Length: 114
Length: 112
Image 1 (cartoon, rainbow over the protein chains, first blue to last red):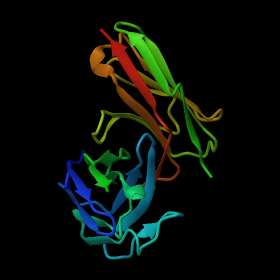
Image 2 (tube, rainbow over the protein chains, first blue to last red):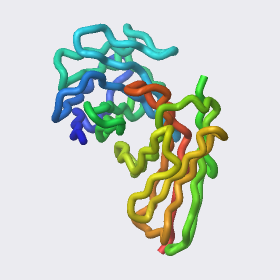
Image 3 (cartoon, each protein chain N blue to C red):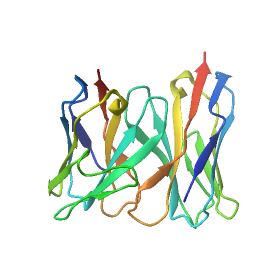
Image 4 (tube, rainbow over the protein chains, first blue to last red):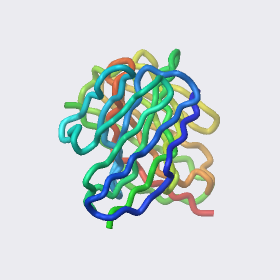
């Protein structure tokens, strides 16, 4: 299994600003995933973050808007840049620990943009 | 492109009832299927994972089945309790270690 923490748990931000979300895992993992859950909707993958290489973004998501860092095998950050109210969502990170096919999710960061 | 659909979108039942949640997916070439639970404002908790070669998995009062050829999975909850109230999401993984494609979820309310 894996224990995942995210910071902050929630934030209220002004339009045009940026927020960096941190994801910390209690074990080393190869890949970390960042998902977005818009109000009343299911989860959509933003990008996959591998340590030592650039993140791979899904269609509709770009690096300039959602830059990701992956400095080591237990940590990643997702930045939501130049925010607008449409960015109001829950952002979740997840991992696939080595030796298991189960994906584990962090508690999420609830972002509200005014 | 894989699409995952869950029916019903919402379900309200009295305590003690047995219930079935449905999930269908369009591309049967999957690696596994997972059922998750999400409580309001919280992250996801993995309930059951079924490998593509398996037919079902059980954990306590939960039983998940998989019919890969027809693109369907069901989550059976026995003797439902108010604490089971949550949103239940199914998700498919197409290759090992790849991303999950999620359904829209079923919002379950179990009334005491």
